[in-house]
Length: 63
Image (cartoon, rainbow, N blue to C red):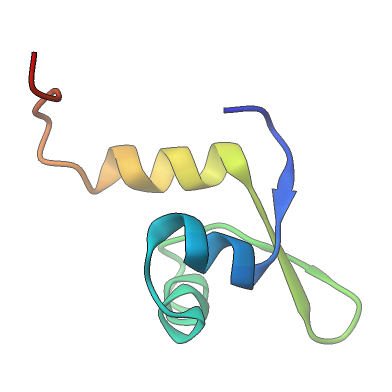
């Protein structure tokens, strides 16, 4: 995954969750995000990968 920036909406779409869930993850410091301007969040793709790694069951995909 390249280290681009995603919006809350794009992150929600990628994780297949609601935008509200992404905002809650940010608020609870489970997902790292940077605030741009007064109201807009941006999330690094590498931080999404880190979040997924930290919340995986440690098993690899089917072979």
